[in-house]
Structures are given as C-alpha cells and as structure tokens.
Image 1 (cartoon, rainbow, N blue to C red):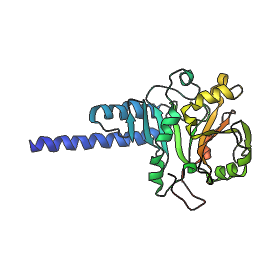
Image 2 (image 1 turned 60 degrees about the horizontal axis):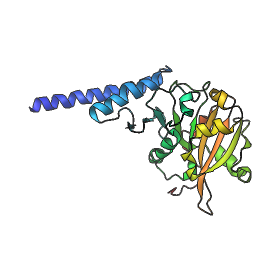
Image 3 (image 1 turned 90 degrees about the vertical axis):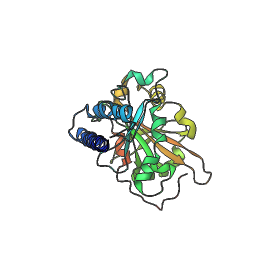
Image 4 (image 1 turned 180 degrees about the horizontal axis):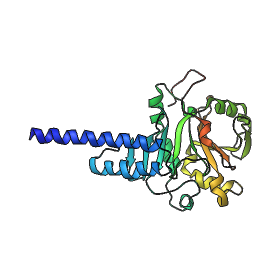
Length: 256
C-alpha cells in the first residue's frame, strides 16, 4: 500500500513537471497556437482531473477563463478565455452575452501586486490587448501588469483634458497617438470591446486594427477611482504601455 502511494505521488510529480515545462516551452517556441495549447491541452485537463490548474495559476470553468503567469516576467499575468477566440477581431466579442474579459482580468490584479513585492496603488496597474497584426498568439488574451511610468506621467500632465468624452493623447515619439476617455470604477460593467466598437469611428468594421489599454485612475484628493481607456486604431501594440519590470517612480502606498 505504501509503495502504491509513493508510486502515485512520484507519477504525479512527474506529470506536474511535464506540464509546467511544457507550458514554458510552448510560450518560447514562437508558435502562434502555443497559448491555446497551454490553456486547453494542459491547464483545463489538469484542473478537471486533479483540481490543479497547472501550469496556469487559475482555471475558472464557470466564468470561462484562465490566468497564466507570463514566462520570464515576474509580475505580468495573462487572462485567456477557455473558448476558442482568435483575437480582438472576433465577432464573438461583440455578441450579446459575451464574457466580460476586462472585468475578469481586473479582478485578478492582486496577482501582479503580490509578485511586485511592494504595495501598488489602483493607478499603478493596467490591462492591454494588442492588435491582430502586433500579437504573437492567435488566442485572445489580456495582459495585466504595472503601468509604465512614462504613461503615468503623460496621463498626469493631460489630466485636465481627459474626461468622459474621447480626446487625443500624443505619446510620440515613444509610441503613437491614442484616443482616451475616462470611465468610473463601475465602467468595467460595460464591456470595453463593445464600448470601442460603438464609440470609436470605424472600429466596429475594423476591430483587427484596434489596440486597447485600460489603466487605473484615482483622484488622491477625493479618493474617487476609475479608469482611463486608451485606443489606437493603427494596428498598435498597447502592451508597450505596461511595464513588465514593474519599476516605480514614487514611494508606494497601499492601493486599497
């Protein structure tokens, strides 16, 4: 009996080791289907068989998404639907009843703070999705990580111009021009994909060209919290607005 138990434990360790290493390798080979493979051939079956999400951090079968720690980045996580959705251009995202992946992604932000080894404010964290041309994987995924310090400074210097109506924020030469608007803390209750499709001229018919970032925003005097939504419609790379090293330009305070 003892030998059987030891044998089962040894086999389990081997299986887990294979799963973890397979997940790391799958991200590294540059195959555009690697992310889908990790989610549906490794994480979901492991969750179903052993109640372990490995090599993912979490499998939420009810809501239909998984959370993955991005390889080689200590703080960045990736939120991925379990359904096959190729990317931002998928018409499935604009259908009634589509899962609100932005809300799911924001709900997992504490994983970023835990890995950062320092307290992060609400406004220190952001989310991003790349355009079809700039992505490396053909499975929809939202990046969650610290906001790049340079973006924080740009938002602060243009704070008076950022309102609930779309305006322009020029991040050149480091990046490009973005349409920006602010939404309240409850703004994520409305799916950001649908917001962009409905409000950005030409976006609905060319979602593959859109790149989107959503970053936390807070008024330190009033304590009000919300978000800034940034959209570029020229096949951009909004992930570049995040800082995967999670550096800081100020003394951190508790974001709660």
